[in-house]
Image (cartoon, rainbow, N blue to C red; front, top):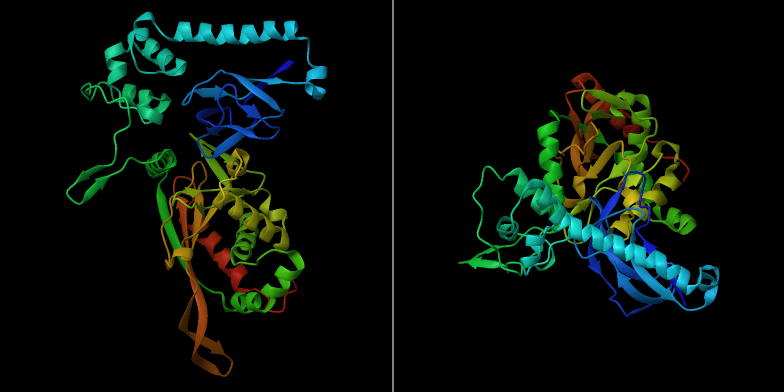
Length: 421
């Protein structure tokens, strides 16, 4: 017998912690190697934590809604034989470290939870109790906070929001132990936002309050692109095993324009401007539940069209399947969103902080247009779309914002209809 410590894995260079959202296994369950043990959530992505070994789950060290730091032990798995057991210390030697882990956790709970909190019949995580203790929140106050976690539990966000508004609002009556069901008032239904929608709401409001949003719009003739794609898409899919959509074509043009105008490939930190070396394109994607997520194509300027198509399809497919990793959404320097997917002609997108620009791609439409020729002007049918560029007027002036989106349009209109795939 040997005991294996399941730790919260590193999930990206900027991800330091995660919240336990659901245990998929309980103490005593058999676990196979690479089988998911629990579900976690960062501020961007929900993920599963798989086991690195096969064995039996003997101890769970964190509860649902607890916040865990990267590298912390979250569970103990007992293994039988195999390489892990052979390489592990003897049972007696392992028992001491495991006991120390348990002792440390219990000690943390004792420190974080004042004696009067133990009188409550409700569950509060050690983190929540610790915050309550530091802020001088009484048991009655703590029990009055409306929890948004599972079974109405109070999580970190709930108590921090309570503290923020503590002086402005009266203490609410103690909530029920279970989350309130959908309320029906006449024909109206009141439904609580899910976790991701709350985060999106928070980010959007913060972005509008942070950046001075201004927009530039430009109409683009993409007739050559439409004809070229229609001509090569079947051969492209047969050769590469990937569908060729318009998105990688647009992404390629944006990456080129960012190289021409590095002043758009920056971010803002307080009163400082950070000039980004790499061009990492965020690609807003819709999830099956209607929420949005922004996976990132790293070093997009170094990809050819085939590489861009593979990256777009991979991230899009994994976003729809809920298989994105936390690192897939980190490090973006500029974002593109395709509002044309839903039939919108153009839009005014909100900047993805701390970036300074976001481009919305409108629907491609057949429209009558004036065509200039040496023989004279005439009216013809062309494929056109609008590009909507939102940028942060704190650091990007109209000349730069307008020139950048014009350069994207120039690259698209100059598309060679005879280009090889």
